[in-house]
Image 1 (cartoon, rainbow, N blue to C red):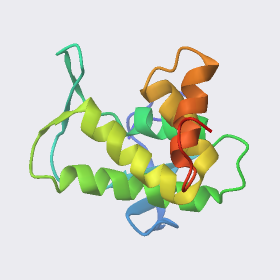
Image 2: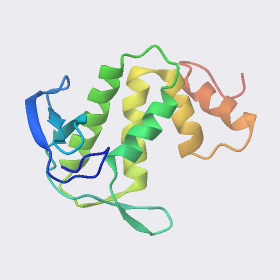
Image 3: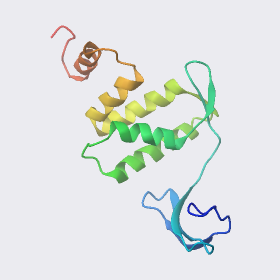
Length: 155
């Protein structure tokens, strides 16, 4: 593992243990060249996933990109960061277990929205506003009215 401080490729593992989410390994590392200490996380990857965008473009699945978009939707919400990590790991496991290596961005978006809806409705609406490309306040109003049980769009 390359040292993030000096770029040395010969770093040493000082300690390994399961991470809090129990789906990754946390490793404390030491660089003998500069004396820097840093932490890395190792996760199991069942298969290499490819995302097929709505434009038809293909790109490698990026867990960090998924995590960023979910954390943006969850920003300033009273949700435990560990719960967010568990949700992200669950989404990735679900994607990997679909049995396909090519996954449509629409499928990923729907799975994320389903997961967010169970945890926090505000984060769900935030994510949906970007995912569904809301253009005006009326788009929010229509979407939120569909969330209200027993409400009709005319109310």
